[in-house]
Image (tube, rainbow, N blue to C red; front, side):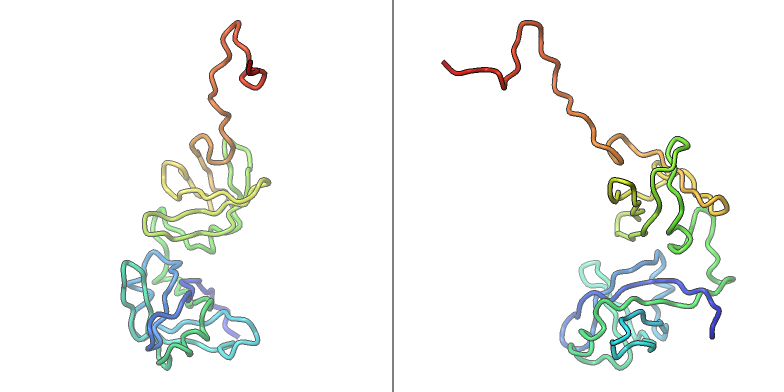
Length: 197
């Protein structure tokens, strides 16, 4: 049994065309290195899937309208592609080659960390989403989930040893902003008490 740590690098989302291509949702900032011809992925699929326990080898990654599309060994038609939809792709982590640089973290290192604002824990990191413009931390709070842009101005520090992500969010990100309705002037009556003649 392998003791290697694995990284979640993508998810297969939709068949593309008739020749087995599949659209991808990427969970990596480095698709040029992760998705090269010959890359082999472990598949996370339901136990009843014919792909359970199998791997998938990439033959090519193309971009259509800024969206990644994968071509895989043995997947040559649309029905085969559709059998893989929603499969999550994992790779084995190479601790030396894959060591993150400064201010870089793997998704699995961030998920579960406590999110702290002004010294008070306000939630935990549930998920990291990788979007074209920027990454988002999906933070689970007592009131629901909040999407936090993963930028230095809003997330100034990540302390893996302490298990803490410090945030300095703008007003309104974690709470509703009260309406800025003007105060009634002396002598005026609220609109709801106005009556028509």
